[in-house]
Image (cartoon, rainbow, N blue to C red; front, side, top):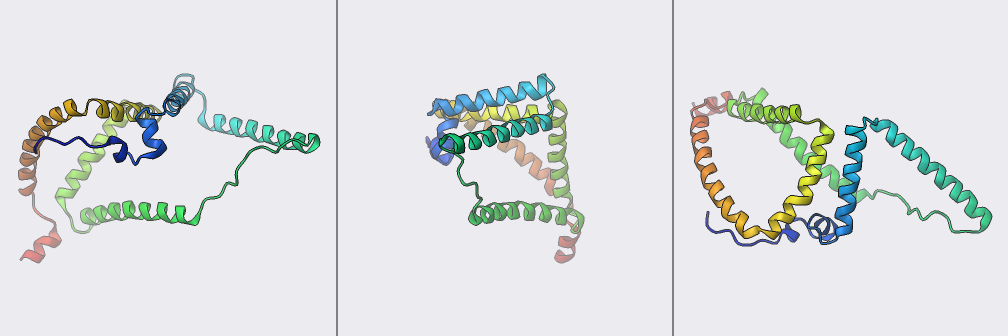
Length: 203
């Protein structure tokens, strides 16, 4: 792995509003996301506010405000609430369903390798992955984990875009060390028997 060329973090994030927010090019979006997520975390995690009650009360307040706004607008000849026509396009649904189908098929293929083919390597990899998820979940609850994810998404892309050269140098060293570890792990996995189906095919 040679020296890494500088890449465009903005393009890697897809450009547009999301990239502007994560890279703090539009401070308003980043500040609002940070403040909103912090307020939510304090409400639900520290103050112990119930999420379902919060959503219900917020929607109730919003519906009442919009109702009286519409009634008063018709009586006073004022403009109606500026609410756009909310409609999910069929194309968006098909794209989301196609993406979900790919992930579901991957999960089903993994289950098939373990349950039907008896692939011990896949079983070990899945078991290690699930154990890591369980270990991380035991350290933080879901809401705190989401909040940490928001903080990382608002800091890591910006820091990498700012100090990309220095970080790439460290990543080269880490990549070399991890390559040695992965080679050792791969040698161990190669000594594990293949799945029963593959063994029958090779006989």
